[in-house]
Length: 469
Figure 1 (cartoon, rainbow, N blue to C red):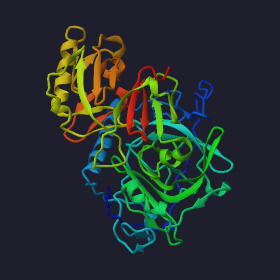
Figure 2: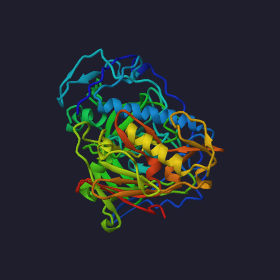
Figure 3: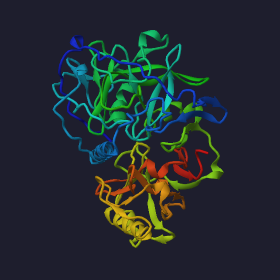
Figure 4: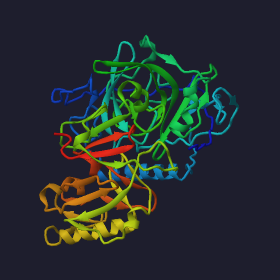
């Protein structure tokens, strides 16, 4: 799907000033035994919750839940705009683009002068709901904390000299000059031509014919920089010739991570680039905020432990993971809605969305059923932002009915209290679902503690309980 965003050119790269960056101490380094390794079954990485005290790049400890909901809404709006082929405009842009040429749509080597621009506004939506892991880059390899996103394709990280702006990150910024295997990618390369599909933004060419990428997210947090190639490594495993973005202008709340790992279905994603060596499948277990860690694995998996649902086909966006939700039950009783209601909206599964979004009639029925099942067990609490089914207390301390989410093909997520309710403050917990008129989304609160496998080769997604144990 091609979505062309206008490009606006501003100040010259030569006159920009880099933003200072301070290293952040990893206070939980002694508590986490990272198991990054490559073996015959694939690549295995440690995965951290963004609010875990043991995350190597934690979000601010005083970040209120209202901010998380706001950022979650921004991500939802971005996905809706993306699927509607209608990106919002913005008055700001990256000064890295000034004086450079925009690539012609559909062409690999062509370029033209342009006075249009990508809508880029400093924002705060990326990484608020995304889990983090580590990635090694360069020769010799240096380790960087990266957010993991199934809804993005291009992997990128901040790069020295941060010609325009870099956000605060844990550890040093990657210096391409220190890597013996780094190479900038030319505009004539086929990979530069893939950026339109990978980022949904047009690429540009520098005056030295280096390919410029533009990746924007949510409320238009963004990264702009040079498409590059280097050796990527994870523990003892290394993969030369990996294409990624070397970010020179990075705006938004990316936590303290160095950048982002894209796992969507696109030629430039980490999954697709490693697939010839490891296979077209990845799995993860998303830990809770109180757990030390979960995992992300790329490669083979034990197929017998999962129940599967087919990946649904959709013309809206070939890179996202669509599924078919077929039913929801509360305390064993199916919701009182016809089956067609579940199919009234396309549904994706996403690692970076916190609150699951459902078709309005399905959500209303779920809200009523959960409230009825908890009547007398917990007093109701006022609406909290977009969450309108709230109770006094905490998810762990209340009698919460079992909620089962069924998918086409027979796969089921049997949700525990922590997958059904989410604590918004010390005395209030709310149903971790909300209605939507756009695309339905299975968020990460419902996926927590399950092992989830994305088998792209066989076009199926599988679920298994107890994944993080």
